Length: 394
Image (tube, rainbow, N blue to C red; front, side, top):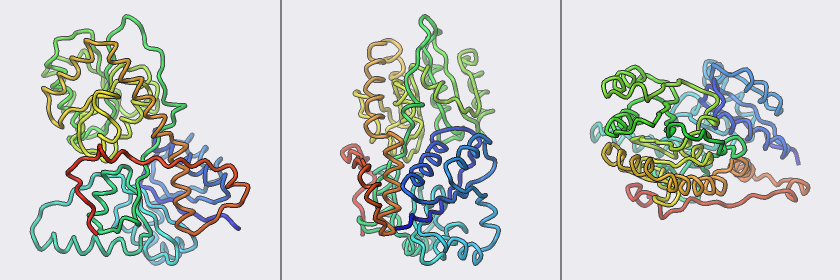
């Protein structure tokens, strides 16, 4: 049986080397090993080394914008040549998504990565959105949420029957993200990695740090975004500018996390928490907001600490506890590494994605491939899914 033709459409500009870029490369390699061909449409700019690795995997690379600019009908014709169209970070009613839906008879798979919240803009608009949401998924074979929280939430939003949705978590390369030697006698290294926008809550972290009278602490802020200037000004205002480094966008996040003692992710909304999973793999003691899909990663008191989102006093207390207890830091970090290896290993998550493609297409792998399969079923612990997601409606 011939392998599948898979179109990977992903609104991702791989201008650095992070876990999302790792996922694309690992997915293409896994698909190729199983006899499938992947054509990837991504966004500019692209890191040259990433492009080289992607092409070495046997995948074909093109620009998503060029595909969209070709128009709906040409796009549908082009995508109609594929068995599977795998959508990632694509808005469900965007031009790219509409082109995928029109590309009959290709099977469309949709991965939900975000904690999207519908605006409260009146009864008429809500009713229209309700109708559009349910019609949007008519051509989607099935949906995967990056957390159980997202799966339930998006299932309710789009009115999906349970058999049309599943949870496939984000993955981390646990060989690249691992604990590294910390410098003895130096300051306690704190780190946060985020897109610097308001809902990532970095301003709450800075204010929490400003509450602590602990000079032997250094905070590294990794990432860029529109809030960077105001965050620098806030650090100056709080008098912690000498303890705070703004490092910008980095490709060595694995090394920075690996040499950090505590990772703080004070986000106000979160679908999964990929940086949290990366920090866990690096053996950091993690302090994170109890929001969205985060409680599926962090079991409070066992492999990290959870605080209510926006609670600067609670955040300061959690930091104070960890700063005063290096043994607790080690215990939480050790347990976090174990959790990451068991649940978020990138090699397992890409296998689940490729298996999903095969299942949707009704593809039966050749005996030689089936003999080497090891596809663990790792479900998210539902007991940690936040109650606000509620039961899934049909």
